[in-house]
Image 1 (tube, rainbow, N blue to C red):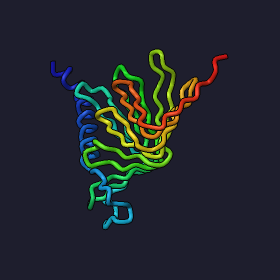
Image 2: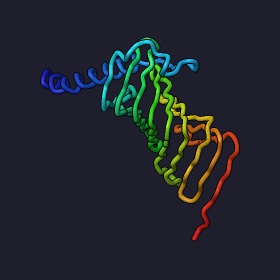
Image 3: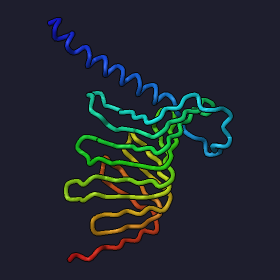
Image 4: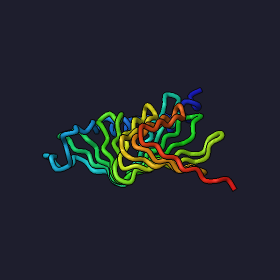
Length: 192
């Protein structure tokens, strides 16, 4: 009995360490105020992490999503975390993986909101009856825990046989529904 307990100790220690790091990362950023910009910061970052990645798991130890970036800077005066070249991967069980890349992002203290800017690209893996889908825009508001990504900016969606352009979009990875808000134009490729 004691042998089984001791053999599971390294795994338990690794899980506790990963949980502590995730709690620390989630606790270290907050929603950006619309009136704030990078020039209004009073203090230098209190920490900088290069080439970081963080994994959020559910209660059963299943990975829900991964967030990585080339550089992460946390500012104590507004509790915002800036990310350079962020990558977010949603791996919800039973749903196709969704990857989001951008030039920059701002993340709230609790990690509930991530605001991506500059060359934002969403790539949703192929699923039953659907091919891979790529979406590009200049701004994306990501709600990781809800599996939602939305923008009010122009977006281009590329699928195997169509290109769709619109202004404004909301994507739910849980329901697999993409809602386009206005000025929708679709160009279908002819079947050969």
